[in-house]
Image 1 (tube, one colour):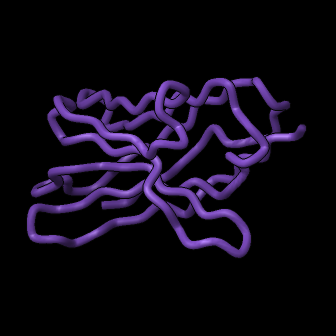
Image 2 (tube, one colour):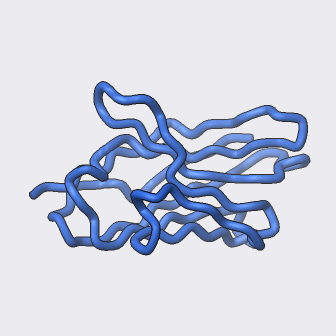
Image 3 (cartoon, rainbow, N blue to C red):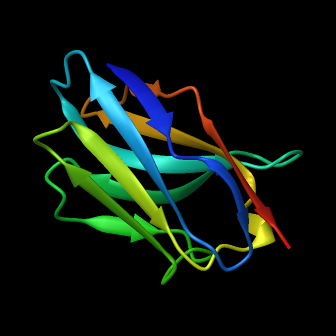
Length: 116
């Protein structure tokens, strides 16, 4: 599976961005997808996740109520709608897909910068 993120950029605090993750290649066995982020000097953390059927989502406490994860199976694309952005949301955001046997696929990352 090849994953390509897009939609990052520079935004002022309180603003919004929508990230996209387009998947290509064989998606056989993919059971869950997610968005992770990594800020300078910090570990990569899970931001939001969704099952392949889209029926179950979960979010980090820090983004609940502000971010929404979704996917369009017809386009093999996953999204992260980010609202009420804060400077602490600044990070590189990575798209992840996981198979039912535990293999992970990662995108190259997209930078999100929130200015105060």
